[in-house]
Amino acid sequence: MGTKTITISLPEILQEFIDAQIASGRSINRSEFIQMLVMEDQKRLARERIEALLEEGLDSGPATPMSAADWDNLRQRQRNRLASRAKT
Image 1 (tube, rainbow, N blue to C red):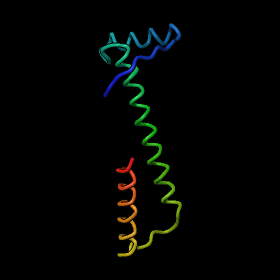
Image 2: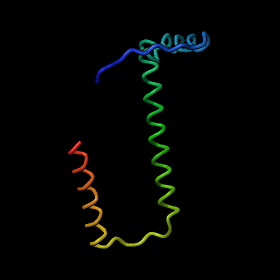
Image 3: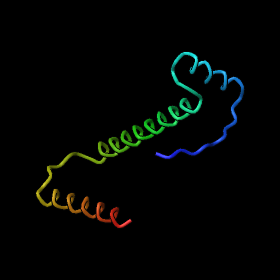
Image 4: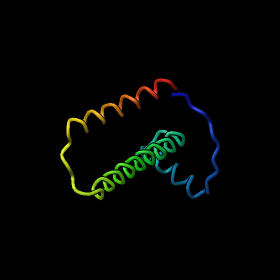
């Protein structure tokens, strides 16, 4: 994965907090600490998305058995998605 450099401005109190985390061994340097925070937020957003989808499924009504046609339809939709991704 390539990296790009960005410059951020933080209040002194936040810089001191980051430096304290580095001093405690939680991170190697400021860059790694910020990367860790961004990745944690990505994971949090992914969990929230999964929870929203689960709630949507639960709220969609009672479950019904899947028929052979339902499974075929699902497989075909997935094949179509994969084919469209391969074209891009």
